[in-house]
Image 1: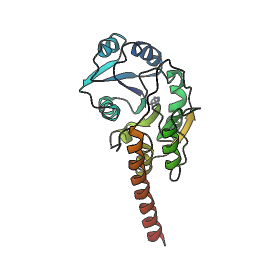
Image 2 (image 1 turned 90 degrees about the horizontal axis):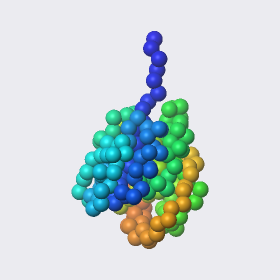
Image 3 (image 1 turned 90 degrees about the vertical axis):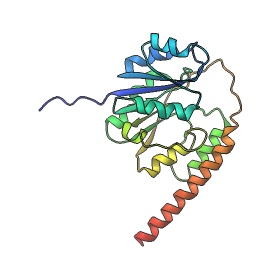
Image 4 (image 1 turned 60 degrees about the vertical axis):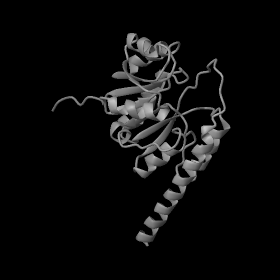
Length: 222
C-alpha cells in the first residue's frame, strides 16, 4: 500500500491595483501553497506583471468585483483544498496551516479565519444576523479554506461574501468551523462599505429561505 499524500493547497488571491503589495503577499504565501493563483480584476497598474514575476499563476479579467474574481479563481485551481486570501497583506499567510488543518483532519469542509476584531459595524451586523442560523462569529473574513468540490458549486449571491456565503455552505450541508487568524494593521483608509446595506437584504432573504426549509423538514419528520 502506497504512502497517502496530504491534499495540496491552491491559494486564490483576487487583486485590483495592488502592485505595491502583491509581491510581498505572494512571497509569504508560496511556502504554504502548492500553487498561488492571482486573479487580476481589471487593474490599471502593473499588478499582473508583478504577480507573475513573484511566482504566481495569473489570470486577467475585466473589472467584475471581488465575487467574480473569487469564482474565477476557483475554476483555475488544481488542488483539493482552496484558500482565499486578500491581496492587501492584512491576512498572514503563516496562518494557512492552521486554517487547512480541520479539513485535512476531516472535521470540516469549510474553515473561516476568525479575526480578533471585525472593523466595520456593518460586518458585525451581518454576522449577528447570520448567527440565527449558523453559529459563526466572523462571516465577512476573506481568509478561509474550503474543499474544491464545494467552491466550484457556490453561487455567492449578493454584493460580497459577508453572510451569504456562510448560509450557502449550510444549504450545501458543509461542516463549517472557525479558527483564529492574525489581522495585520495596514496603513490604508477604510471606506464605508455601502454595499453592506444591500447585502443585509440578501442575507435576510436567505435566512427566510433557511427557516422555511427547516420548517418543512420538521413537518416531514413529524
